[in-house]
Amino acid sequence: MKKSILSIFYLLLGLYVFGQSVSHDTIVDTRTGIKYPTVNINGTCWMAKNMNIGVMVQNTGQTDNGVIEKTCYNNDTCNCNTYGALYTFREAMKYNESDLQGICPDCWHVATKEDWMELYKLSVHGNVMQQLKTNKAFSPAWDGNNSSGFNAIPAGLAYDSIFGRKGDWAIFWSSTLYDKNYSWSFEMDNYYRILSGFTDLKMTNTYLVRNAFSVRCVKNKPQTNVKP
Image (cartoon, rainbow, N blue to C red; front, side):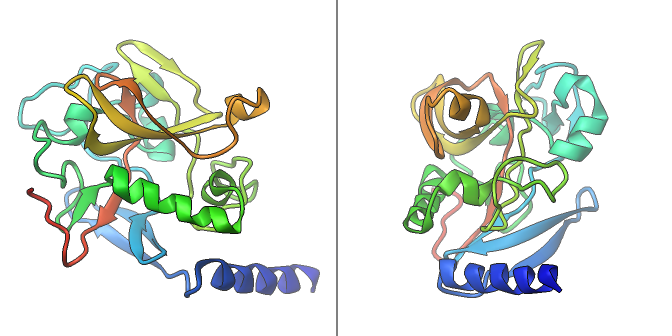
């Protein structure tokens, strides 16, 4: 009975927080058959799961060869199945930064810097990072409350043959370049939270595009021009 009351409470809280019904749906990437849950946050439809498409390569040996390639944490396909794949920035954009679709399905695009910055609007309802991160009831679990339904999980990163921070760090590429060597990315870092380095969603342009991070896709809006 208590669980039922709590479920109703959190549902109503979600309706209040976003000022609208938080709609959930599922799409199927016809290229792979993989199902991706989606969530509407403040009028923007996000995939609520990290992208996982491509031929797995060892380490971050992704190349411009006309084939989508991916990195699985520790070169283990099970990690791609659980946490999604890791992509260098160039691979995520399919080596064409002018086409925001990148590795996403048709009618979707790699989340832009502006898409990610829209999530900061959740701050009027509390800590943004906590609203985006999964909770203990989710698998893989993390230490958020996931009131947004975004399902951020700590997938870690890869650089060359180095893998790190799975279990305590989520970092995502945006499709927005800073310069030819760096792109904007967004991170949620439990490790730094413990050290009080930062306590919320962090935007940065300090990582080389050769790093391999997670990727989230956003559904195109009617006014979205995916080929600027």
